[in-house]
Image 1 (cartoon, rainbow, N blue to C red):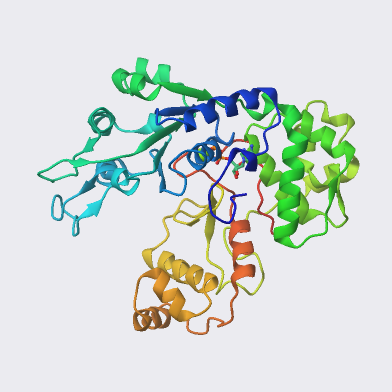
Image 2: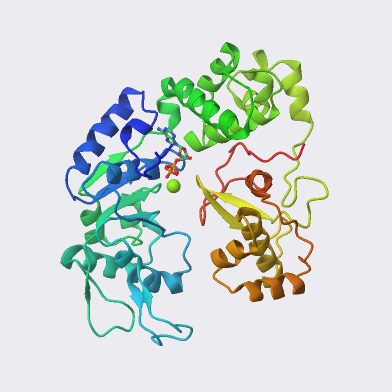
Length: 401
Ligand SMILES: Nc1ncnc2c1ncn2[C@@H]1O[C@H](COP(=O)(O)OP(=O)(O)O)[C@@H](O)[C@H]1O
Ligand SMILES: [Mg+2]
């Protein structure tokens, strides 16, 4: 979706519904100033995308766009990550570190799940907003920062204030220019166009010949309530394209949706119900038989992010060694060669060779396994928001068929 120059514009988004026109109207106005923006809406409605478009259409286009998911950072590290720290300011602070505010200097700082920010960090954020300065942990001097703040939340901020989990003064500072993004079920007229948009993209990326969505399937998609919003729709289309043999998507490719849609009994054909009866295996590992050694266990995060599995489906923490091996597999799979893999891992080539030997990865194929790797990787586990709960009912793009 992002153009080659990496700058996102409102024109790159599918925005059909009247309610979304209002959203864009507000967002454009916000783009023309540096007013702090608060984007409210359920998970998957497109908050981050809109934030990126605000930046893309502002004077700060092309400047850093720094994303922080406040709900995903361990509480102890929040301050150091946001504001930076000096060398030796606490145990483990072996180096000086630039905080996210400084990283975003000249550009935009996107604070996602702002309602999850611990109270102490809220005080510092308030000061950054008020004085345009941050105090890195352990630093003697404050640092001037020039950032544009866009925050996002899927929580009821007023309720958080009432519960004492969000400072009231901070709330007023953040809530200067609120933009509420409606859930997909409140803008169902957008579903067909979004679906076609994702279909075209997935078919192109996956090299499939699927070209259209049948009328009955479109009808089904439009009636469904989409608790996981646009992200869920995107995943459902992804999965459907992979399931499909023909050049048109039918109701059969959306068995979960068919089963959940209101009054689905009438529209879910036997084939769809039969497909449902066969449970889809969530493979927290290699999808392709025989690829166990080369495919890392990963978790898709958001639009383009990828995480390494830390806790197994059985609730067990994976060892550092297992995770390191996965990180190396990932790097090898995404690089054109071992030198490049070493570079992107930030280690020397001989260190990489040694680790590969120790981890038993020596026989790793040399060719660019990139495509297969990425496909497997993004199929390996359901997309989850970092630190957030898995969206109930979210259709999973993971198929081990
Ligand atoms: N209007 C839209 N047009 C195209 N893609 C969209 C639109 N809204 C959301 N998406 C896609 O849906 C997914 C979820 O959007 P995101 O901005 O991450 O949602 P949120 O931040 O609200 O959880 C992303 O992959 C995004 O690209
Ligand atoms: Mg998000």
